[in-house]
Amino acid sequence: MRALIRRVLMRRTYNAGHYARARSHADRLLSIPHERLLARSVVLRSYWNEEAFQALVSTGKDWDDEASIHLVGLATERLSGVASGPMHDQRRQERWMNVCASQPVPAVSIEWNAERMEANFSQEGQRVWFRYPQGYVFWDMPERYELSSTHPSLLCLTAETLVFPWEPSAQSPFPSTRPYGHRGSLAFSAGVDSTAAALVMPDNTLLGYHRRSFDSMIDHRNAERLMLHLAEHQEREVVQVTSNHELIRTHHGKPVGFSFDLACAAHLILLADHHDLGAMAFGTPIDNTFLARGAKFRPFEVSPYFTYWTDRFAQAGLALLLPVASITEGGALQIVKQSGWADHLNSCMRGDGVNGCGQCWKCFHKNGPLGRPFDINAPEIQQFLNKRPMPTATHALWALQSMGLEDKVPDLAPLLEQDLGWWTQAYPPGFDLLPEPWRASIEARVRDFLPLMPEPYALHNIDHFSDE
Image (cartoon, rainbow, N blue to C red; front, top):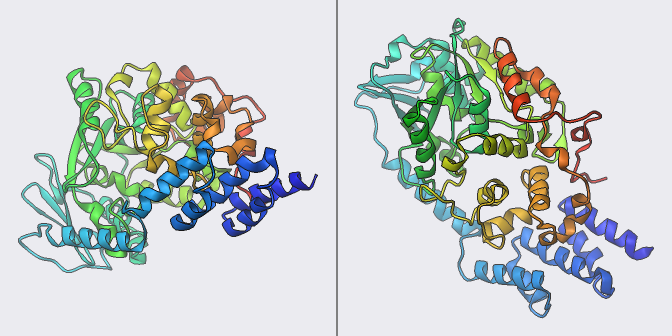
């Protein structure tokens, strides 16, 4: 009985991120034969999560079970120079500062205007510039695009998505309200969730792909393969826009990436008048709507995020559209598998135009369930599998179950005992997030692809890493 209580306390403290306390409980279980493997796993994984790699190696070097040998090997790699820790972060930041310093600037300079967001945009040829407090970023727009014909509220919304985390002035009222356009659009990444969104939206949806203008780890070739297929078979219209706006956040000590999740549509917002757009869609599944970090249910429809941004997009004449909010990442995989696009798609952003790298988190939880090869022992995959809370937790648990890999995360055994068969079904309340006139057609397509979750919804009970 004491061992059972100790195991429960160990698991709870570990899942809550209290790693030293978890090790204390685990230490008292190491001498019990049937508890030893799990206790060892908690001890070593807790050191891994703290990046205490030397302590991990010293503790586990004499343990002879497979999991311990593997973790000791990974920690040894980290100690031998694999990028990690403050020095790596500093070098990475210095690198991006150098990239920022090498970026082009407009021929005619303007000052940052905190009072009028629309005044921070200018155009030279087909290049549109945005002045933010620390410098400039640009988009290379399609032919015949005219900034002067773009509604000021679209410019204000674009600016807000780019500087929202750091410039409260961007949240000021828009100068006027733009009338709604007539065509739908999707911020398209060519990944699984985004592709599933494209498949359930009307066929005339404009897919807008954002391309980085600077070198980075992202390889666009896998995305290009799918977009080429769509263009050649005239299945969807895709517009690609090159930009460097993902550098903005590096001025705030963050790695390169979107300033804010909705900034992935900045190019499409700018194109809304050019293409008569009246809806802006995002491939955001249940894992990021009705589940917080994929691990705990929440009533997303009343969240401040959804209500605020729905209103802001509406002021710019755009319906905020979440076509896959009724499905999970597992459901998105099922939709893609049923389409004719699966053979042309690969979510890995480091692939070679045909295959994935087999070493990244996307290769594990996107490509793996599609039957594609990956290395479960790859450092990045292990890093994510060992995080607590685990990223995209419910989907990762489903992926482990569906691929028979439960033994790779022994501390998650209680969570992996639950039936996750419903994970590939659609959640009917998610349809309520869809505004008219878009709801009817999207809901019909989702229902054609997937069965519906039965009531009572198991989704409502998801709370994987509670302290309780």
